[in-house]
Structures are given as C-alpha cells and as structure tokens.
Image (tube, rainbow, N blue to C red; front, side, top):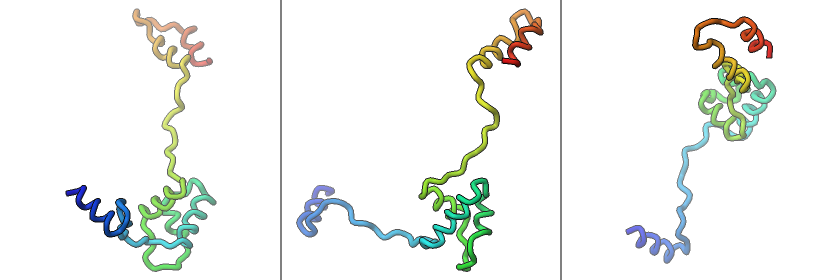
Amino acid sequence: MVVARCWQQWITEGRVYRRGGSERPRNTNDREDRAIRRVATSAPTTSLASIQRHLPPSRHPVPSRETIRRRLTEVGLRSRRPLRRLPLTPHHRQCRLDFLPTSGNLECDRLETCHLQ
C-alpha cells in the first residue's frame, strides 16, 4: 500500500517526499518575538511572568508563559537552574569517604586538613 502511494505520487507530482502540512498559526509575530528576545536578553535573570508583563501592549491576548518559553528556546535562550551545591573535587570526595574511620574515633587533625584543602 505504501509503495503504491509513493508510486502514485511519483507519477502525478514527480516526487516522493511529504508535502508540507498546514500548521497551527503562530500566536506571536516577528515583532513580538523580537520584543520577547530583547526583554529576555536585557535582564537575563528575568522570569517568564516578568517578561510577559514587560511586553509592549500591542495586542490584547498577551502570549502565555509557555509561548514565551518556546520563543526563547527557538533562538537558543533557555532557562538555567542554579546549582544547589558546588560539585566536589576528587580530594574532597575522598576526605568525605575517610571522614569517619571504621573504629568510630574522630581525628581532629584529619578533619582540619580535609576542610582546609
């Protein structure tokens, strides 16, 4: 069946690839996309809701946060989450493993060297 459809398309249209389908119309135009990008790049730590509030009032339905996120992703801007903690170096990792010896006694000098290095 698929081969027959491909053959029929080759005969009628001279090609075998898919035609471009109709897409849902975009909610924002190029000018609004540039405004979203401008607000986001002028203040990189701005939230999506803040970008939404700072858009020019050119249109009644304000683009949703998801639309703003998609527009920023299209131009290569994405949100970054801050690190919860700094990654440990191999030395600090080993110090953490060696922190409590198997006997259960704490060695104060060992503890100080681990935290200072």
